[in-house]
Image 1: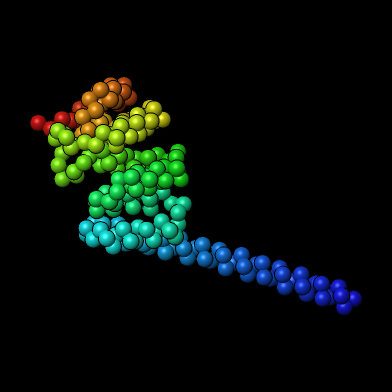
Image 2 (image 1 turned 180 degrees about the horizontal axis):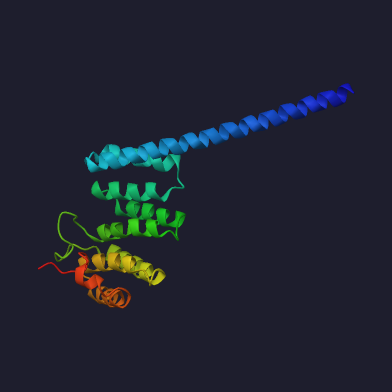
Length: 200
């Protein structure tokens, strides 16, 4: 009887320990997510104020605390681009964001313009200035836009985004194909949408 009683006590103690451990782990995960979100928000604020060194530090903390959130990775890409960080690191963060949520249209749309910025050598000058494009990254951008348009071939909004950056990167053939598709999906957009009307 005493042995059974001790066994029951041990079982209860083990059960209590496991419940407590589970609670602690859950709380730790929750706190890490909160810390990540706070640092992400701080990084965005600092980026707007062009305090880029601190913005990058905050972006790195957010990524470290929650490496499953795509927003943190493309935010870090933005900070790296503005601070003229290594473009291969920018690309790595973009790819990570997309790998984490490959079928999410919001993630795809939010990373599109970064491919444009990757393809431009000097962000202070227009991409239309001769020699201001980086061929390897231009090819990557072209491929990204093509895949995006193929995946969402019936989404006029996606087509408009692609057309905007194709025109900016002098991808004339691709741009004309996209405009043709927009004309099939939503011809009215060609008459009023600010991204599709050529400035006079």
